[in-house]
Image (cartoon, rainbow, N blue to C red):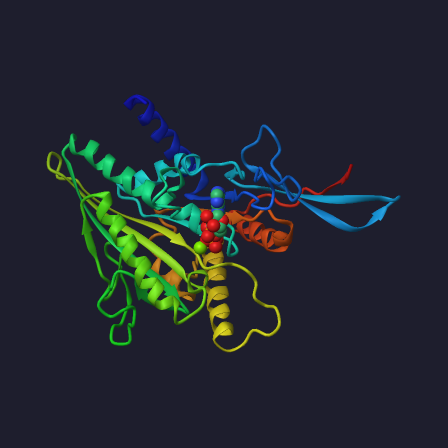
Amino acid sequence: KSRADEKLRRKLHNTIQELKGNIRVFCRIRPDFSSPDGLNGNVFNLPPGTDNLVEVKSPTIGSFNGEASIKKTAFTFDRVFGPASTQEMVFEDISQLVQSSLDGYNTCIFTYGQTGSGKTHSILGDLKVPSQRGMIPRTVEKIFSSIQELSEKGWTYQIECFFLEIYNETINDLLNTTSKNNNNDLKYEIKHNLENNVTTVTNMTVVPVTNPKQVYELLALANKTRSVAKTLCNERSSRSHTVFQLKLTGFNQQSSERTQGLLNLIDLAGSERVSRSGVEGKQLKETQAINKSLSSLGDVISALANKEQHIPYRNSKLTFLLQNSIGGNSKTLMFVNISPELKDLQESTSSLRFAAKVNSCELGVARKQKII
Ligand code: ADP
Ligand code: MG
């Protein structure tokens, strides 16, 4: 691709972003592992010729005139990725957003959805299989290659990496190896500098990085820190939010211009409703913490989308941490990840509704259709 193409693309992207008010919602449906081709057409339908529409077909109970009928509900998003979509296709659509953090924008990319819907696959993927690498490794590589190009125009960048987890409304430093994730003696406090809109977390490990390999080593390290914690709590990864951050500080020797952008890639806790009976003790506490932060996140984004005066950032650790990365000049993208399986239909529908609310999308084009 030529530079002119790239420039035009960038300009177009910025225009679209301005029109959209900097909040976008994408939907991604993972393959159905129970069907041979992975493309289950029974629960969701992606109408041909569209790339932003998903129809949910829910079988209705009973029949009319002896014929079963199904009701369809349609949701529109800024983009819908079907089960056949690749990691590369997904990254193609976010790479401009990623690059804008080099121009000094704070950006946030979230994956939202029930456990098993493809959040971690989308955000991290399999680092060892090139085609399966997710948004984090692709972002890291894009950032470093862009920096190389920008150096021809006099720019130098300093990149710093943070990796943390929010579990039960408590922050853990995933890059802190010394305390083995036991943060009893360390206090992680979120501080906002009102003058420059920069957020810091006290005591958080910050690692300067100069190439992708260093970042991958940090990811492996974080994974280790997490597995230590995992033995203490089953399925910890689905009960906590993982926040990967790159702080990008640029300086142009020719113009003395300075930029600072924070790029956040966030794997949210599983959104499944655990309101089912029998949840108590630690599990209840976890569930309450997850519900609190996910609903706070939804409230923050919809308050921003509706241009409300008061944005309730302070209602959860997650939203408070991201106060300077969602809203204002920042760019936010939420992926709603969906399982195509019939057994997950209720959770999928509830995720779609959440995401639609977040984006103030159109909702509820219902019509009846015969099952052949
Ligand atoms: P979550 O993080 O939402 O709990 P995962 O990302 O771990 O879900 O996905 C569950 C399983 O499905 C994993 O084994 C993952 O590799 C696989 N998976 C998810 N999405 C895709 C996809 N688009 N293509 C292939 N495999 C996928
Ligand atoms: Mg996961």
